[in-house]
Length: 320
Image (cartoon, rainbow, N blue to C red):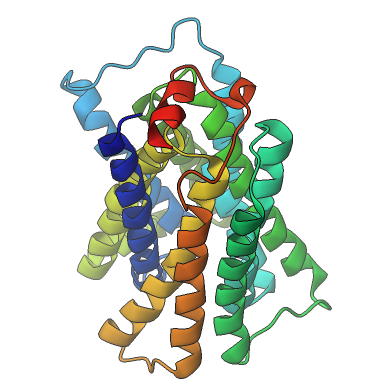
């Protein structure tokens, strides 16, 4: 990989964190007008429409011939279906703060899975940096008076499983990018997500006799704007850029950027919702940023050649 390609990967990783950080605001606004499953359905309808436009006009060519499609199905089962389903139902039994704390552990789970399945190794500095970033997120939530209620095992288990599925997605996507392009993976992921949540939404409304309420949220301009952000920017753009980043840097490095979303959400809450920023917000944010920088300190991570995708071995050699 040339230096420009590596720099672009890191820029896109930061951009992903910024987009995800703002997505909490838009998700909160969307859920004021629609049910969780309906919101997910509209979100992935918008994202699939966005990814389909360049394909329909021939600007992007997809080629799945002779490629293992069952692995893409497994990937989509993890994300978006598994992650969002487990997270949605987990938050029905737990608080959003508990969800935020558990989601912060994604880089640690990703590091372990990447070591087992991709043979990605990490240095002592990187391990320390990952834990520092996770601690930064947990510190913010704990100082806010939040914590994890272990007596509520149902919500805890579902939220932990959502973290596990997202980590599994990062590792599997890293592996699949040896065969597929980022656009080919994104197209199938978002398409499967849309079809799945559409089926769930229609089934739920049909069973309860509320099909007439399916389109009710579309009467709100706020809902439409929120869905366009969540679908086009927070789903389509992040899926495409995340898959690109995973084709350039290791899964363990990529995953730690997700904790930057906490920093962005704190800043966004202060700017748009007039929420107070305290000393612990600043301390936690600094710990997260230092953790991300330490994890991605170039030239420190030595990956066995057998774990590298075709074309990625020489990329790493040039990058270091």
